[in-house]
Image (cartoon, rainbow, N blue to C red; front, side, top):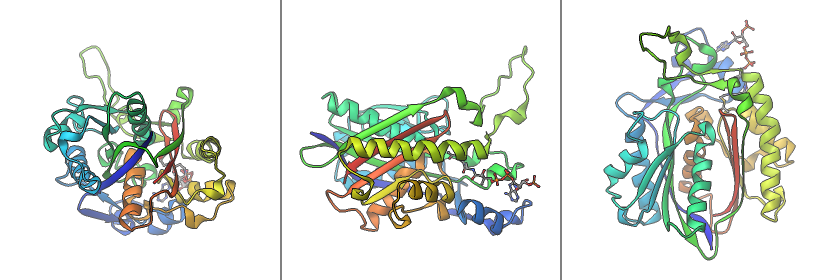
Length: 321
Ligand code: ACO
């Protein structure tokens, strides 16, 4: 039995902010942002929250999968920007959709969060503990970036993506690879919670995302192709056998580099970063949902996925759709 993705859903905030819009409030330009990253616009929250987007994405994925809330045994949300420290975003989703039988918790593996959630769900399903899982990646990155720092704030967006996974006799997950390197955590970090106790001097400017963009680039263009290659081989395939590569949407140059290193044409690498920006853990499931709803994915097709980012963390999977 294999663990199969049987439905997808996503939710983006209503408000679209273009590069042109940003150039009116900070010293940047569409030319700078789009030529270096491929990003043209992103969706940012006004009234939406990480939980409200997750709930909507979850409902759409359940509808697509044809499963009821009572069938869900497990809910995992990959996020670094939940609305609360506690309760977990997954518990908010559980309450809203009425999945009263489910176990619900969040994980933080930054941009690899959805992929780690997929592997955790797979482990539970393969161990026979649970049958049906709802996995999500959801972020409100607009609240963790410094809007005075043009080198980071233009890169990110808000949104949520979800998938329902379940054991299947025919198709599903063929191979997985994941890893972490905590020694390089400082190249992409967000201290977030500062301590305001009477004994501590707090530097509030440390609260936001900071990044060594060039180091992150080097990490991504070496680790991601190696991880994909390893996973594709473990699945008994070659890169040429893969129908689509669904990669974390950080930057078009990273995706182009991975395509070159694997000798696979760019048309097999669908993108959403042009209209979504980088949504960390939500990138991969939102992209999958867009591919699914466009009708690109047919049963049995081979899809290679990869998430990579803060931690540092990375994870790849090859699935039969
Ligand atoms: N608009 C205009 N100018 C800008 C902006 C902006 N938004 N941001 C920075 N600049 C300026 C800088 O001030 C600098 O000017 P200077 O030369 O006068 O000092 C110049 O542009 C170059 O700045 P760098 O930070 O060196 O820009 P770089 O060429 O490295 O590009 C980028 C930055 C696109 C982020 C690049 O490092 C990259 O592709 N990194 C890959 C990692 C990545 O995409 N991270 C995203 C999140 S991580 C993840 O999801 C895994």
